[in-house]
Length: 351
Image 1: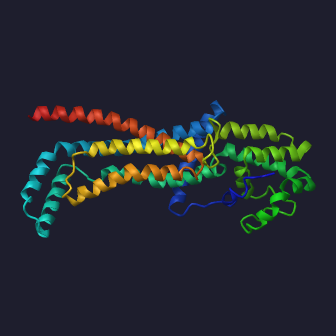
Image 2 (image 1 turned 90 degrees about the vertical axis):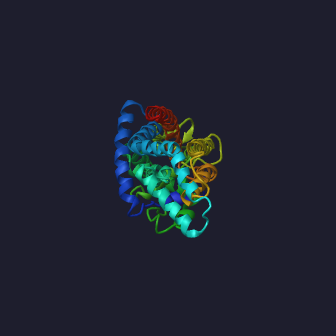
Image 3 (image 1 turned 45 degrees about the vertical axis):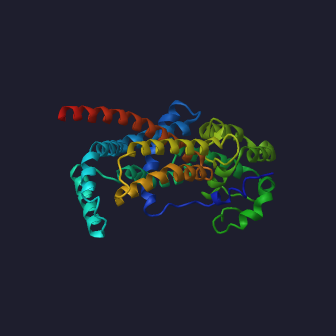
């Protein structure tokens, strides 16, 4: 008996990205399809996960110039703190609104003249958000973007549809009423319980768990034909350390490791960012206060948010976020060492 349909009902209708995210999803989907074909030509096992990792590395490589700019701004801000403190000292005893506004303007002009942006640390994240949103559609409906997966699902659908009507009815009857309640999104489901001619059925195949397929194969009997081999191909592609990347990570074992690692790596990255801005801001500076507030939000709120979010999205998206965080952490550590030596050298030369 099936158990996953009720939990995965939202997957049975095709989700369309909006007019803004749609073109991004299409572009990223094309790139991801090329990467996947390259990996799949080498190995089928874990090909979805390996393609995600390579894709993440590519995205981080493209965004690396922003990371450099962010780190440079943070270290330059530390270096110029004495000059900024002199500006603040001028207005130390002037608490009226006009004087405080003048101080803010003078600080902003000083920062701009020296190529400092107090909000530069948020830019890489803001750019990643539409990418993350587009990847949600790509990973949740990989059969729409990856040719190999689409062909695999099509072959599975053809076997299901080739079974006699009476057998199909026996296989899908337990949830026929549930499917019919989802009309018109699932108009491909007939009284026999299945029609392979609609794309919605790919979403249905996508939502099945291992126990569902065991029931299907056993019920189809002699009509299962090559279904076990196709399901093995599907598992080879989609499984990563026993985690199905196309299904939600959930709270069960071993899927729970995805949200845990997503939360932990997000916290580590935010902690490093907080260390970069330590002692570089003044609480009396409104712009600095905003930066401090955003840094604290990143440190405490973002890990929780990402952990919860990755429970209820395809594990593939959680894997992308984890790999992205790990790469960012490595980049931050290396850039921190580089700019520390660079500015110390410049300070000695100027001194």
